[in-house]
Length: 147
Figure 1: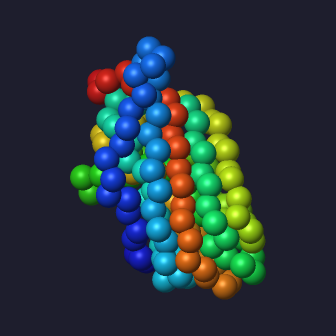
Figure 2: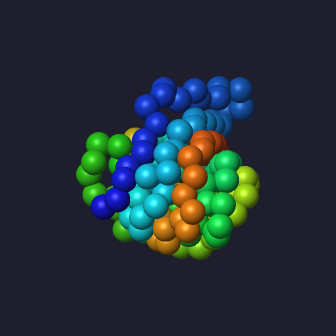
Figure 3: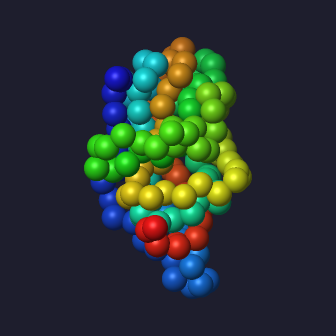
């Protein structure tokens, strides 16, 4: 496994619209965090029992030469094994970091997070010219509670 960069801030949950839940955070990324296949970036923690509907990821230019490739999904915060399909619940390996600052919107069939989990970005292709920056993420969904 490569370098792991994780956010440590507490999330803020929106209580304005019924069960709506919005988790947002950011994490600073060093050049060593995006230079190897298997490097992991975990920008935001999502509470157990959330049915995720949308993910927004915004980043500075982390690769000034090519497009970073990654699979985006969820991994339990307690270190236990993720359920089948959780590692690509948002997006399978593909262009993600781009060669300039970018915002990625992922709307997908709802995915139920059963344990407190991190939004997980796992590089599947290393950066040609890694650069330091910040990855911001927002996860939107519905707080339904744990089954």
